[in-house]
Length: 512
Image (cartoon, rainbow, N blue to C red; front, side, top):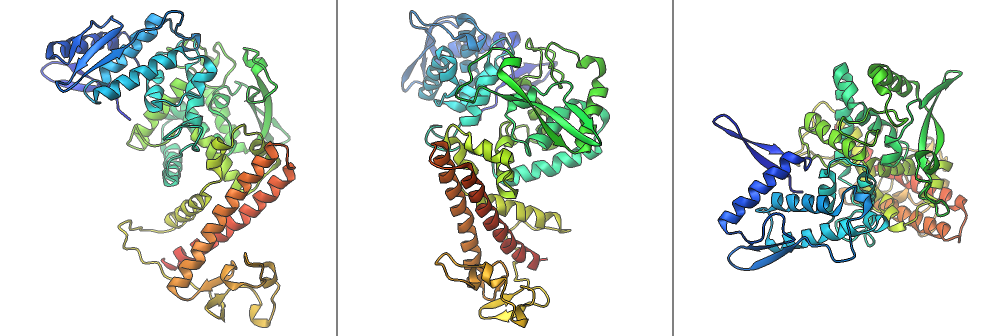
């Protein structure tokens, strides 16, 4: 992703400034940069305000067109009229001029202009030059449009290619585990001022990585969202009705969202109440929401734009990387994955069965073995005083005391040496045979090659069960199955995941 920058001239020196919003100052700088490219001959024809520019790199010429066809206009969801929106596109194009080939520039401009003229539903499913489209609309200043909503839907659906053919791409799970560790360390040691500033980030990570809320559902948490009853604490959240087929738009928060309660730990309830006390009277704003909106918003609540910017600032301060690979929408997917692997409740089964597109959902279930690996490694990593990441770590077999010697390895099942085969009867191979040691969770293989085969079989079983779950969900969505079948498929996946964790933990324990 390109970072938008501009150069500031100061007393005897200059500095590079990141551009996060196309404000009046940036528009002025864009015009100045445009004039500079005219003097260099890169822009051969057209003024900044013209609908067409002619650019040249001395090898070929390329026309950049900002015109809006007769009978068309920029859509209302952008919050801009045609002149303002086109001005933003021109400023964006000038800022990336010098970074990309002219043919690429023309393609990006064409996509941004078509995007602004698309209706709301089409914009939410936009799949052309997606990274630039997202960066561009996040730079448009907050207004009364639906920019945040469109950005959220695109990010939920976005892929490295066309969204309808591939599942959403999450970051490497090691990044999420590292972020989790860092945010916990930060929260334990930071000041009250920092806690007030970054509380939305802390609560977002803590809550939505367990409860699969969409970004806007989280940002619209009611101001009075916590209540207690007989030493139990409950959180009220707003869940959208607009994902349901039979729900029309009511065009108000009260009509488009329904209230739901979930029991939460007292520690989390205390943190929310402490935040409310810290912000005091300033919590009163236009919308009945928990978080304070940014100063520049006209919408009366902490918007998606502002939450993205706050996350970037947090990553810059805590992770030392403002472009750390984590997005607001990721935690909903992480919550689904956590619930899938740790225990499928009726809530998660309803969520799974309710997905409108299996293409979007499939990344929850494809390659779940990588999630198990990351979690097992993180547990091992946190339990060691020192870790080497240069590839020289030797993995050795760890055999627990009292294990019974069998053909090809050891068995740690209790009383197996006394002839008790009750654990053996719980295990059967994919070929249908009982007491197949190589596929049993109690088996510790002897040789290196056999150990790797056991590990591969366990890994493949997790991924196969994930794909099976995906197929069951698709059948239930189509009305060809019962929700109980999802619960059974979840159970099957949870068992194979537990087996794979056991296999991995044996290896890593042996390396201590």
